[in-house]
Length: 282
Image (cartoon, rainbow, N blue to C red; front, side):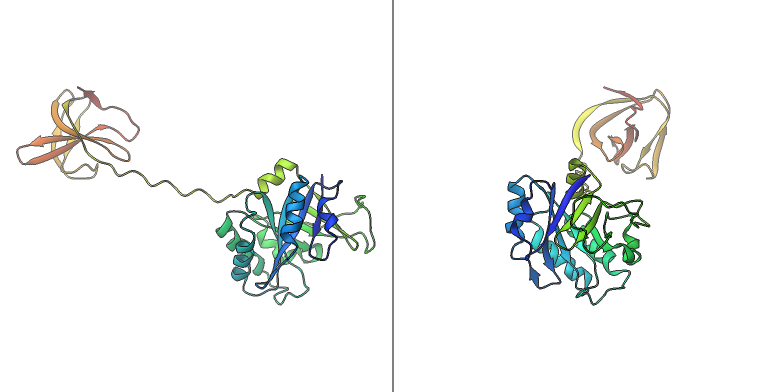
């Protein structure tokens, strides 16, 4: 497991670069009005010290989409290298107890960034965020006592249901917020990366290419009124028949040939949707 410390504006600046920790999680924003003035100071110090980084938002329970947008606008420069998290607790949170708020927040943040937030919550309140268990990792707070001032991992059972386990466990919160992280450095880096599917590339518009030749059918086929397999048939040809064509069209699935006729054109499939040639081209 990795060791992580989480810091905010009143934390000693030295916490961001502790020699024995692997990750520094920095408070970035709160509500839609507050940006931690020490956020980038601690973030850049941790980065220089070669720590893995995280950034988190403290919920005030206003409109969840607005808070997610505020968080994103203030941390988008860190997206891709820092793991984002949302801090859901009772203090200063007018929506505490609402079981849909956090899901709306993380969904909006994911829409904007492509990254799913970790969710910080005390073990006794996991039910408030349980509907996020298939989307987000869990950062659970569960202490053996209020004065556990050690990096020694407590021997205690931690509730994570419906998560199978935690991604982060915060086990002290008095003199320092100590955490253990249930992944590797590579795993942490993966959590920071976007999971939003890349937009599908626009398919190139199919265009006719002027090309003359002959096509000898390897099976019975139809001449169509237009280059669509469902279009009306002009004629039915048998295996061994040969047609002349003056242009080709590679459509999304099939290769079409254009046959000059006394009244306009006819169209025949030369390759099927699997790329199989249906005759002999010359």
